[in-house]
Amino acid sequence: MTPSQNNSTSEKKNKVPYHFGEKLRKVREEKGYTLKVVAQKAGVSESLVSQIERNHVSPAIDTLLSLADVLDINLEFLFEEYRKSRPVNIIRSHERPTIDEDGIVYEELAAPQNNSDKNNSMESYILKIPVGTHTHHGSYGHIGREIGLIIKGKIKLTYDNTEYILEEGDSVSFSAGVPHFLENAGDSDVEALWIVTPSQRFATKHQ
Image (cartoon, helix red, strand yellow):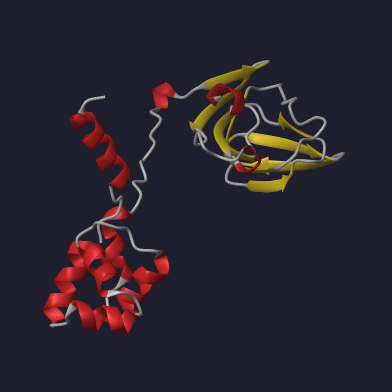
């Protein structure tokens, strides 16, 4: 390994991931505090404050809180540039992943995050049930919970041998552990928005 490679490796190891130093120093100077005064009030060494201000070390959280308290700094000010990016995920209407189960169509609306805990995952889809058909997946029940909103048509929900009629605009929620299925109870195709947790149908498509 060449000297330049050694220096590069050393710099990576010593790289401070969060740069609070500039902000701490700027506020300290604006308030007219010396390094010694800030260090004494925060209960740390003057050399540590100096190293933090020069971004030579990352402060422990209790040290950072003490410095912020001494300098009367809002933590939002310190951490504002480190907020995580929260991307917006869009699935175009003509690009929805679909599953067809004996004529029943499920169009996925949102894919679970790759790092989601499987037991806490959620799937949502547009459910389309043609006239004269019914779902099969929940006939024996499964773990989790379901929430549905009827967008168009009429559905008969059979839930543990009890029947419920749901029409356009109606919503329903229930524990999925009980045997259940949905049947088109009208003379036109059914369309509904459905949410299930944890993920059932689409879970394997994203593994």
